[in-house]
Length: 310
Image 1 (spheres, rainbow, N blue to C red):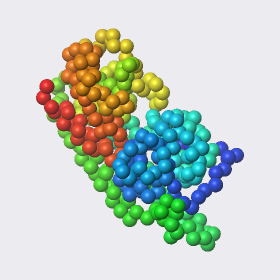
Image 2: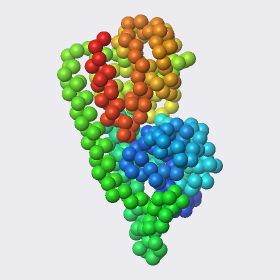
Image 3: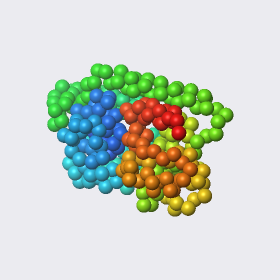
Image 4: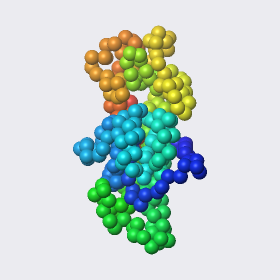
């Protein structure tokens, strides 16, 4: 996971706020914030931030991940906006820098990066709270979070078990990563299954090998095709297929994701014709592509899929 620093030009200072107000433009991070006990300080989300339901239903929606309503977001007066390299447009992030005190960029590229992501969220909150406690001591103002904010929570977060929650998530992930390593080790010497993971239909679209999804599949010993990397951002990360590629005949496993395209049973025959020698299965796209609290569960789910006899 490569952290990206977004530096604000000195000519455009943004006033700070003593109230923690988080807007998440990343569905899986929204779920992570709640898992860490930070839900009361989340004031905005995208329409795709649907977990945990129904807790998120009371949080203001500010458009989608690609079409953020900046005017509505600005009215929420966030202290932090969380974005993602894959999920959000660069121009959106650049616009946010003009009026948001803290733009937090996330970019998990592999399952193990979730350990860094969890730490990033914890430190985001702890650094903010510590900074304002220092400011309150210097100014003599009460910025300790004793007042109730407009969200109904204290202005500064008080989550006594924040680190414990983070550690439990990290421990669960480490346990699953170890189980995946054992699975791969047990399969050494056998051919690596070729997997085509489809995320879209008409046109067919799949994932490059340097995407989070491909790395999740690699944890259970699967190799995604085509054997290409897409770079850090852009359309090349999600290759379009013509359906005439010669290597399609050599695919062993064809996985049809439930998102972003909602593949269903009605697509199985069409997909089978694309890869006539493959086993075709519908898979839970959230478990495979959402990071944060679903990472460990997703790896466990994939281990089960890989162990299923043909």
